[in-house]
Length: 449
Image (cartoon, rainbow, N blue to C red; front, side, top):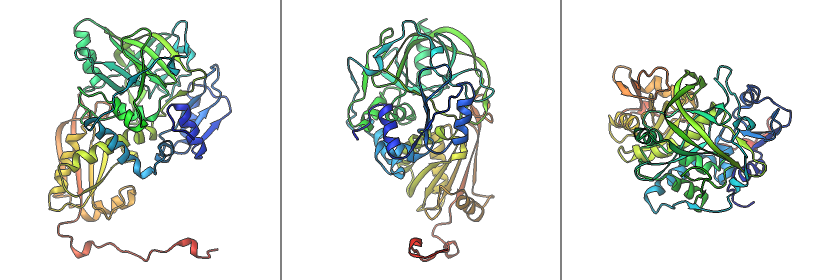
């Protein structure tokens, strides 16, 4: 099979690898589609072939597990993090700029008038305020420098040509918007749905790895093995992704706020309804027979964000402390808990690593450090290290009043305490920390009834 370049190619790759299933029973976009997804979460990605009242299918679950994504990149799942780390590193080593092409597949069909109600956008959780796009890649240009930014934001459908958008504190898109708004100008954007995961990795690259003066699309180019393909928009002065399934063109309006939310967020809780920013949709184009792509709140967020964050922090923390082996975002930590696996060469260095992790990724609320003899993906193994290697009197690091993630309900006005657990044994390693070991055998060699 040829190298996948768009979402349909990726789905074919996953299907060939046994990582895709089709839901042929018609489902309702309101609650039912997400309800089915919740029951099957964590397994094969899904294509909902028939969404009631709509002509386009919907896919979700690409990021439910790392094996799904590995099938797209032809890599073992345990090599994805290093692949993404190298892609982010390419921003500083001969980055490949995107190219603008004509006759873009994403512009094969143009709606006569933009009408979001014709798109099967799911209403996910039962208390959500409306239908939500959850994984569209938003592209904007710095109003002062013209440098592109690529990011992901939740988008609530509030009318035929109107969207509510959340722009978190500290995000580059919010900086772009605030400077445009100060001039009384809207901020042009494209909202790209159904893209190759290379673009999603680029869009979720942490700002600590991609400062505001760097175009993250070079990350996508690295992962695609060729320049990322963009196309000129019909109505706004910013490009769309040429191979997206659908491009929504629009402007974030200055001095306008409208109710947005509630929405079941990355924290696992509902973000409350408040007056937030508004997108006026000016055009919608799409591929022939598009497949709409949604991210199901839950494990998809942990894997899609986690892989990119892990890759960045392995590089960032490893450059500051010695002995770091692996970085792991825990599935239940809602991207607020990270495990560092390391063998510190000196006592106290695990605590340095904890501080480095918080500095590199401010969303973190908790960091746990374990040695290399601990399986950091196994909660039982991590807990064993916690109760046998951590002295609560001296191995817990508490940082009060630190900047955090506004969607975490324990954080108030972006400020909250953070905690780190040093679960590593002393240096040099005492004999009483030698773990039990057993002869390695191939169980297939044994006749077991």
